[in-house]
Every structure is written in C-alpha cells, then in structure tokens.
Amino acid sequence: MNILSLKNVTKQYGDFLAVNNISLSIPQGSVYGMLGPNGAGKTSTLRMITQITLPDSGEIFYREEPLSHKHLNRIGYMPEERGLYKKMKVYDQLLYFVQLRGYSKNDAHKMLSVWIDKLGVKEWLNKKSNELSKGQQQKLQFITTVAHQPELLILDEPFSGLDPINANLIKDEIFELHKKGATIIFSTHRMEQVEEICDSICLIHQGKVVLDGTLKEIKKQFRKSLYQIRIEEEDSILQSIQGIEIIQKYPNYILIKSHLNKNDKEILQYLAQRTSLTYFSPQETPLNDIFIEVVEKHKSQS
Image 1 (tube, helix red, strand yellow):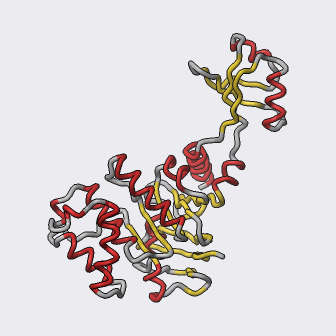
Image 2 (cartoon, helix red, strand yellow):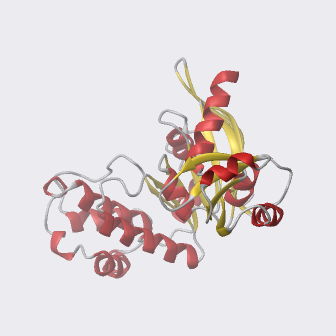
Image 3 (cartoon, one colour):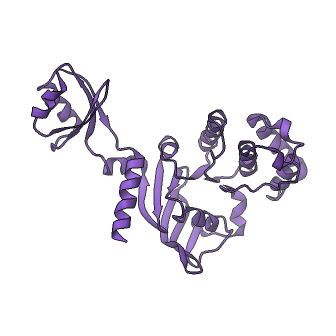
C-alpha cells in the first residue's frame, strides 16, 4: 500500500514552473529519497504534501484518500529553513509546537521529555533560539518534527549544520523511527547519505521526475560492469586480455571495466584463467555518478 501518491501535480509561481506534472507513489514503510539539484522542485513538492501551498492542478492522496487538513497530524515536516522563533524560549516553543497538534499541555510535557533526554538538549531549554548554534537549532527542530509520533516523516536536509557526532545521533533516531513503522521522505542533494539511508528514490530535475524506483533496481539499471581486482603479475598483462579495459590503477588494486557479455561469476572465471587473480570485487556505480548522468541527459533533451 502507498502511504502517499501524487498524480499529475503542477505548481507555478508567476512565470516559473516549479513542479511540472509530477506523478509518484511512496510505499508505506519505505525510506524514500527525493533528490535533485537546487531549484529542481523538491521543496515546492514537499510544501504541497504538507499543504503549506496547494497544487495548481493534479491530486495528492494520503492512504488513497484525497489529502486534507485531517491528515496533517499524521505528518511530521522538518523544513530546510529554520522554523523556530528567535526570541522565544526553547521549551516554550517546543510545547507550543506539540500542542498545535492537538495534544494537552500535560501530554506535550511527557512526549517532549523523552526526546529532550534522547538528544541531550536539557541545558538549552531556558535559552532563546537566537542564542543557539545552527546545529543546536537543527536538533530542536528535529524534536518538533517527531515528538507527536508521525507515521509519515518528511525531512528536508536534516543533517544541515550538524557535526558528525550529532549527525550520527539524528541518523540513529531516524533508523529507530523507521523500525517502529514510520515512512520517511528524505530530501537532499547529498548522494552518500541517500545510499546509506534510502531504499527507494526519485530524482527531480526542472520540475519533472526523471528517475524513480528502488535503489537496488536503479543501481542494477546503471551497472557499468566495473570490478576491483588484484593480480600477482604486472598490470600490463591486462592490456592483452580481450574485452578488459583498465580504468584506473590504485596502490592496492586495479579498477577495470568488462566489455564482455558475461555475468560477475563468468568474469571472475575468465580472469582467473588468464591471470593469478588474488582479489575480485564487483563495483556498483555510485549514486552520484547516476545523478550526474541522468541530469546531463535530461539537460541535453530539454
């Protein structure tokens, strides 16, 4: 079952077409990466999902029902831009944001206490937001997003401003929320984070979806037949082996490409018969390379 579906959704601001007839489906329980260059239409799409703005045309469905205000308390949205009040004390606004979801003050206290302990923010509670660092504000914004236990969690560049220790802390909490059943939409341009966190992705460019599917399927689609190998002979022997191209030589291995119509096991056997092979490892195409290839192809077709 899809928790969220967009069908032919379009959004225009004046003469600028931000979202151009987008259709996509987000499976329940997935960690779904929404990728794209700056200005691609990611944030405009997320704002329509959270009803900050409405589509000019098209439809959005939540659990197969037309998306409406009644669904918003099931959603947690962490925007890229800061959403904290600068002059308001931290704890007062944490309470305020949870109570906006319809919870009593007493219930809000209980829900917040869990996250205050988890993320270690107790010493900041009587400070004002403008007294905190960017990373500290990011942790507080994460709390306002997850404290009401949303079943759909939308995170737009959630690690922005965080040092590696706190980024790992937030990442662990995201994994834990997913384990408990939350569906997560993760919007970023950091490909290494997507490869670590997401199981499905879509790539948006110039307001259009240009790539959509599971990470496994997409990796398979863009497989380049690359292999890391080590051999006992001089690497020059590879130049005489038909169908094998040396891509790069490294101190501890050689990166090769196969131009043969063979699977990984057959390539392994092929090399082992012709060299003293000591190491063999098939290599996936990095998501960053796929991203660049698809965007450049789309640009040339525009």
